[in-house]
Length: 290
Image 1 (cartoon, rainbow, N blue to C red):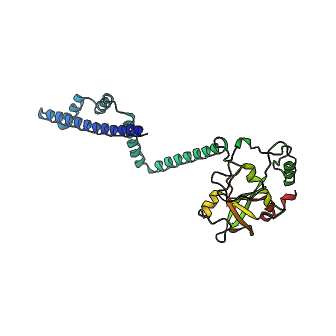
Image 2 (cartoon, one colour; image 1 turned 120 degrees about the horizontal axis):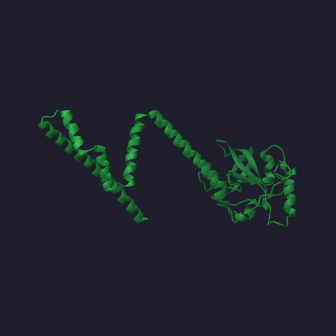
Image 3 (cartoon, helix red, strand yellow; image 1 turned 90 degrees about the horizontal axis):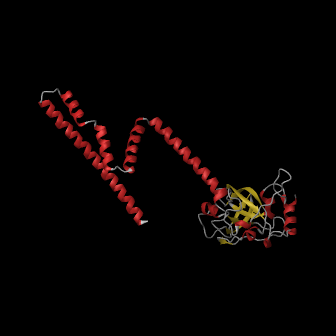
């Protein structure tokens, strides 16, 4: 790494040294032209004709500079530097074009960033859970509704002979009130065995388990997502044990999920996790019986 830095710095210094040489050569050419012009004037030529003849005698100024650069081996960095200087002069002369160009570049960079984020989420980055290759999602295929009902889940879980265990989840959009500045939050209501099935350990406090469930609305507990804890509770270590309101129903914070855990969907980062048996408190209607 140090060798690479030394080489890079050496090339930068070399590029600037060559740029200085180029300026020196330009000044030297100008001096030769001036001397030849004065000589022609002494011979009786008019000043304008004297300078033209001096330039013709030396050859094209631009061609001489290009030949000098070629003989000297001007590196790519110096050429890029010259292009940047020229582009900067053009952009300064056309501010409207500059704004359009900058906006177009920003739009292109943003589009590429979105595409890479989606590619990273869906293809490159695996689920941040132990043994992600052993996870499967079960869906219905005989109708448009891919989700299962909670009674179907319970039946599948109890009759399961294929998988180690089955867990369920559903999305929840709630009003989240910590006592000041209520806000909307997205989370998931999950079966009591959810964290055990995934093999997740808490970052702080504890997680809820199947043993915490004793029927509908029997487990008013909440586990905060790490990002939500960081952003809305400022990493407060004493958050465990506090009571918050979800849709005006009290839930006790029992723990915080680990930083790397974002649920089982790559494109969704839940703000919180609550037991699915308390789902009726979070939305109208009881989905546990249908």
